[in-house]
Length: 282
Image (cartoon, rainbow, N blue to C red; front, side, top):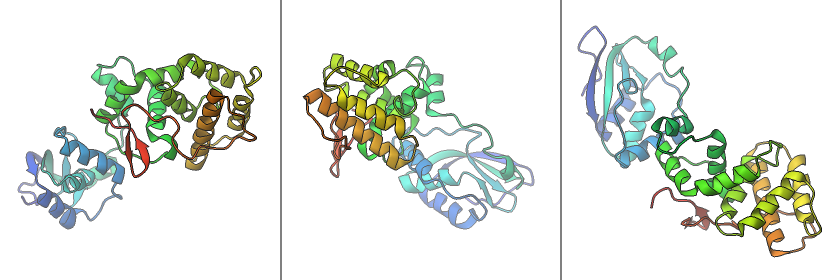
């Protein structure tokens, strides 16, 4: 299908775009666009492979009168990456100035989508933040999951996430962060929950009885180590895990140091390349 307009007026056509067509559009017409978003392309490609792609009239492909691609490059890249065709609405003969105001609105977040879907009750941003940190685990990688897959993970691990939010509910910088909640949410599935609640209580108060020194040391570290870089999140996560494991085991530590391997694997968690990863399906 040619991307050259056959009319001098804008018009739209629902089209099955094959990987070869998408590659052709990108090679010939993608001359004036922003940088592709690799993570977004991964998500869209995953939806296409899973058969969950839906053509939406106002989120398709747009070409200017001279054939230049104005909108939809990430969708086209996703078709190429998925190596499967997908139906999309294709607009022709658009005004080139339309590109300046395209995608200027507020994108729906995963929380927005899950709440609009309505089958999980009210989902909070704090739940999603804790879930993402829990899934990322010790290595805190950047990962690409669709709202569908994140919804499946939240259904599977929501009890642990809610336990963490309930017991680390005070807004204390560093201490009640999503990173700390992630460790508690993971541990929920493998340790005594009364003991886990006690750990959270001591951590939130910064003081405890004899034998709670390692939790107090963690409290001092978390309070004194603000910031949200990947390195800081990893250190907070690793030291929270090490502190919890030592406290549960009655282990005395001369100093608090970060765990280097995942101490609280999730049920059903897959292990790839020596690293634990939570699976959405199954």
